[in-house]
Length: 314
Ligand code: CP
Image (cartoon, rainbow, N blue to C red):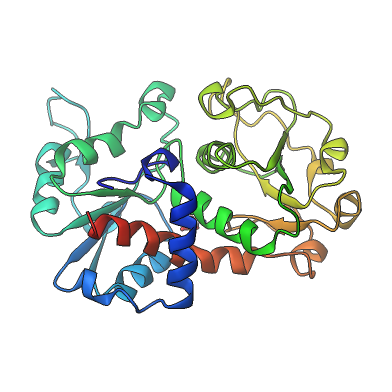
């Protein structure tokens, strides 16, 4: 595997899951792979889990890690081609990316949707410039339209907790005070569609995800109906894709509560974190025994380590 930007980059998903299990049982077993190798993690946006879990994954593999917070530590970067650089961005990505590539063996990059242009966001303008100009493998640490390391960790977590071969996995929109990107739900749906799970997506009207991620999956607009018999509830907010970046609803009846969870088949509660308490999910659910969000976050180490191992092995 050269780059990792979506589930489609994995040569074989079930083999990747087996590797993740093997790594989780023996995290330091592949340190020879990363000896004298360096990963640089580039952050255009804030992070807790992705930063620390990817660093930990790299260290477990014996790699050196460097982190650059572009908007705090580096020069502001221009991404437009052919632009007259008379603004506040002194460095162009056309130079910055290959320079970074000369200092390392792998680049991780986080660049969220800007919401300035749906076309730019959905063409993955920033991530694709890294892939094009880095000269070394690139790992997406959440881009404009996908968060594949998160989805991989979600998959590992569901495999650990499932009690039947084909669990009912429900992705539910939930309210949030700010407009969030669609990267996590897009990626989750895309990834889950590669499994044989019974996947259900529920959200208010107007929050339809892009068809390139949904495929022929139908939306269940009634959240209560979607929750019936669910084995996993994956809550997430996202802004509208059609009215791009807009908040169309703050309906608190979509908050995941104990009453909602009672409709399920003793479902486990999942969220990628950070999570807004008593907006997305009530304290009672998040602090209760059905919540597996901490295990889910721990598995970010093993999703990242699996991906890095595969890249180091070429
Ligand atoms: N889930 C996730 O990506 O968390 P961070 O934004 O803190 O990295």
